[in-house]
Image (cartoon, rainbow, N blue to C red; front, side):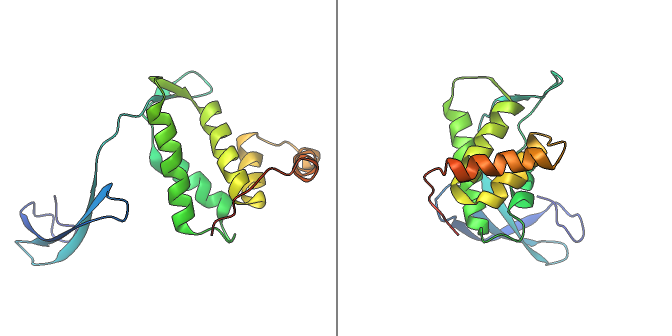
Length: 158
């Protein structure tokens, strides 16, 4: 692990702790060159399917893309960072447990919207507007009418 201050690669582990769910290990390290302390996180590298884009390209699954999209949708909403993290983790578990070696962005987007709908209506509409590429206000109105007429069972977490 390279020191973020001086770039030196030799360091020692000062403290290690398991994360809340036991799936991450937090390590405090100290650089042997400049003595700066820094934190690293270690997690098991899961085998996630390749993502098939709408244009047919394939690329590796990127957790940060999903996390970023959900964070943007939940911005200034009463949705905690923990709730967002759990949402992404549950999506990843779904994708890992499936036998597919590839998963389409369409399926990923639909699963994200399904999870967001259980958490926050506004975040759901925000995500849907980008994902479904709403062209005008009438598409927003239709989506909101659907939400009002068919309220899903929700478990609000914040």
